[in-house]
Length: 514
Image 1 (cartoon, rainbow, N blue to C red):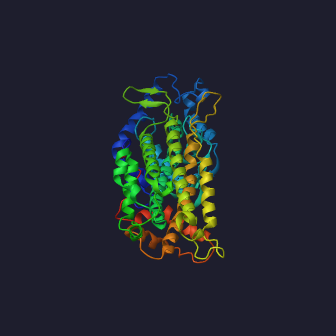
Image 2 (tube, rainbow, N blue to C red):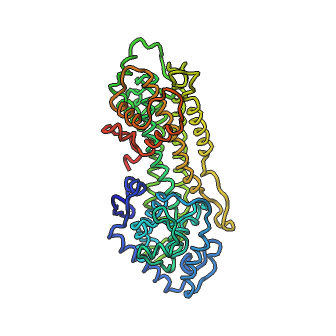
Image 3 (cartoon, rainbow, N blue to C red):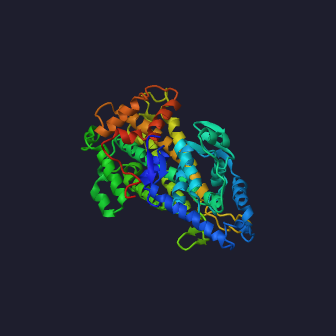
């Protein structure tokens, strides 16, 4: 971890969440601990009144009417954690699990959950020391919070389950001891506070958003390079066109495309006497498609930023009045909608990218040799690389079906409408990986197309991108094992290297204005 961010509950920025996802450490601001302490004291005062209060001295869900005696309150909290830790499947990726832990830290740090300082300090210490609970990724419907995954997180805090320590899976008690930490004994309300909330869904959705941001920027660069390779026109990017429509993302995307192509000798070479009147939509409509994707990603980002700073467990503790109010902030419908929006954007970015690759390999459309090989027939060139891109686009179309319109009753019909936010958010990383591979294939095809023009250079930013790529992948002169070329290009897309290569030109970002 290169830095540790100090987080103020309720006021954490999207840039901070992105940094945590990328590996930064996190701790609460010192000013937050007083509110946490007062919230826990309020729970003690509520208990002292001897009244039944949901989540504090009653059962849970359908069992809310069962009163629990004071002598069993610690057992109640332990039991809810162990019984709810019922997830299945592969573990959450560590970066997303760390982000989930930081989201929970901030939510509990608002001082409305009744968590003790000691318990929250342990969660903070786990982030600091790099102990990440092993959390099965499947089992949440995004209803009464992300119960199963958050229970697995909490189970590790009480010494049950496992932690990732580096790349190793270590029994929880052993990992805690090695780090000089003690497992916690959960007090009244604490187990429920930890396992109730939307942090699993929100972490996955934020990870999808941040990956989609890199995808958008890489596709913007690849699209500009493809436009040059096909000797396409930059006239459709004229700002006057986009000002008349007015969409912010469209205007910014068009401006970025113009900047990426500014000074291109390839573009200058066909300004006069080009017999083509218009380019295909995959070139001409890049600002409209990519700009719409940018706008929808930003809208999702605004929703997720609110959620990331909110409190979503139940009941909520209002220390000033010593009240515990039971509501439904755990229902993850906002996250589900945001995840569906991100999925659609990822799908469309990949779809238009694949169409540009298809254009480049078709000599009737691109004017380049068939399948971008100097000797077509003897060589197949990019023939099957385009097929791979098409396959990935179709897979993403299947994954893009909205999760938020699904619901299945759970908990003996107590939770009779659920958000499916966990499903909607968990698919995003894989969808982004698919689309990044599509853009990587386009990047290879676009660079190959420019090489085959064998004449004028592209713009300074795009030539910088070609140099970065050619350091990893030489021009395809004859058929060779193609998969390593795709993997090398994909590595550049995933790492954000294309946006770095065009620096100091700043590409539009999802987090602008948030």
